[in-house]
Length: 121
Length: 109
Image (cartoon, rainbow over all chains, first blue to last red; front, side, top):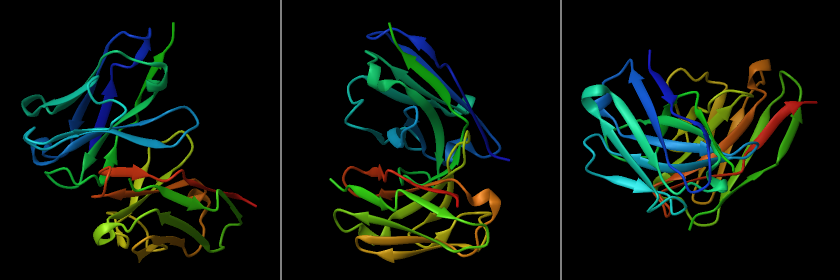
């Protein structure tokens, strides 16, 4: 059974940093691209960032480019999102999502339950 | 930039009825790179359809997708109680590489 478990969310002041983690199990992690997708409270879905199976291709939404960094550790079956210079508009539930293929195809076939990031002073 | 709009915003139906949800793109979606997701309250989204009409693993056949170009449809042939949820369409492969529609809520009449 595919499982994605996010962690690392919490309350952070504007301008500060936070690192999210996603632990994967139940599939060959290093065979698939992975993504972060977020959802602000009561709002819709927004893709944040994605990374191919071997980290050779990485993409970011314009809203986070230059502030967020995605990376993965295939040996640890883990995905990460380093978030710097956080803003109020970054407040959301952050989901880790698995792609259907090894490259960035942006079809999210499995999702974690999310970790909540609250940005407030 | 491809912008997706979904209609209606809310669809009020009863169990057993047919639901027809629309997703319209501001530009043609290449190769029908369109997906549909279901999100039940308090849960993560779940992939239903990709490639406009291919059902994801484990999705019941009462869910079907159709369309091409700029107009796409998700049809639920007979609503089950667990189908009352929010449905999002998503394009991939365009510019930006991925974007979601605002969602259609299917609720009880």
